[in-house]
Amino acid sequence: MTGFPTGPAEGYSGIPAVRSFPTIILSLLSILILASCSPPDEGLPLVDRDIFGIGVLWSDWLSAAEIPDQYESDPREYDRAQMAAIKAAGGTAIHGSFDWCNIEPVRGSYDWSRSDEWVADAEEFGLRVYAYIGNTPDWALPIGWSPGTGWRTPPDEAYAADFEAYCSAVAERYAGRVERFFFWNEPNGCSWVNDGCSNGNSYTLYTAWLKRAYPALKAGNPSAVVAAGCIDYGTHVPNGSDYIEGMYAAGAQGYFDAIDIHPYAADGLHWEALEATRGVMVAHGDGNKQIWVSEYGWSDSTAPGTADKIAAVLETLAGEEYEYVEYARYLVLCDLPGGTSFGLMERDLTPRDAFAAFKDVRSRYILSPRLQ
Image 1 (tube, rainbow, N blue to C red):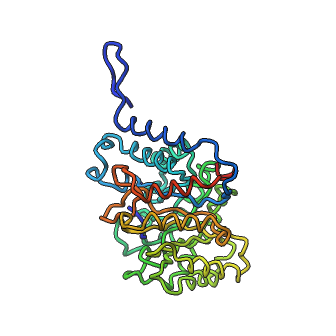
Image 2: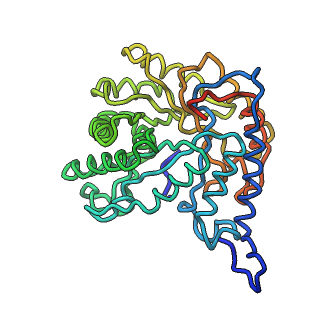
Image 3: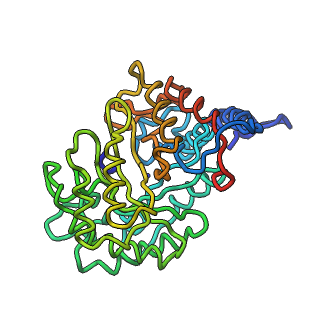
C-alpha cells in the first residue's frame, strides 16, 4: 500500500452524570479485554514474536463525515475505541506515523501534541508501537515538488541536517516507550519519486537517506530497532529481492536491524517473498537479523474465505518455518478511505468474521513474558 495522508455529560440535582456513548463503548470493550486476559492454559504453545499486530485507522486519515457519528465530537475516542478492540482481539502491536511533515510543519518548531496523545493511549491499552519515519514537510521539499507530496520524496540535500535532527528528536523523546522504527514506505513502488510506480531501481537514493536515518535514530536512542526496506513485495512484484540486493550494493549493510516487506497475496501471504528476502540476508551475512511484515491483508475482507485466510496466515507465522519473522501486522482494523474493505471490522466497529478468526487464533497461543 502507498503511504497514508494521523467525558461524561454533567448530571443535575445530585444524580450521577450520564456517560457518553463512546465511553460506554470503551467500557464494553474493556470487559472483553478482561475476559481475554484470563489465565491461559499452560499447555498452549508459546509465541515469542510480535506477529499479532493490527493497524489503527487513525481519525486523522478521515474526513469528519467518515468518522462514525458517536465519535464526531472527539475523534481521539475513535482511535481509543479501536485500540480497545485490537486488545480485545488479542492484538499486541499497532502502527504509528511519526510523519516529519506533521511533527515539524514549520522549520525549527516541533509539534508533539498528536503523537504524545496516541503514544499515551497505546500504553494505556498495552499495545507496542512500530513507528513510521518519513514524509518530508513542504519547506524541505526538493525544487520542483508540489506542496503535499512529501510522502513521495526525501528532502532536498540542503535539509539533510534537519532530517537527521528530526529522527534523533523522535527517538529521544519516546525512548523507552517507542523503540521500533521503519523508514519510509514502499520506495520500490508507488510511494517514491518516479511516476508510474517505476521505482524498482531507486535503491541508491533510498539507501543514501537510510544511512542518515539509522545513525540519527540511534543517536536519539541507542536501543532503537530500525527496519529498512518496507518494500512492496506482493505477488504482483517480480524479483522483489533484487531491490534488497541493490540496497546491499549501495552500502545499506550495517544501517538496519531488520528488513521490512509487504508480501501481499490474494490467497494469503507471498511466502516466497519472505524466503527470497531471507536468502539475500543470509547470503550477505545478516542471517541473525529479522524480517518484519508491516503490512498484509486483503482488499475485500468481507469476501467468503477471508477468515480462513487470516487464520492460516497467523498459524503459519506462529510455526517454526518462519521463526525469522519478528513482527507482522494486519493492515488495518477498520476500512481505509477510498472504498476498499481491508478492515477486520466495519467502520462503526462491528466485527467481521475475519476479526473473530484473528481472535480465535490468538486465543490458542501464550505470549512470552517480553510480549506481555
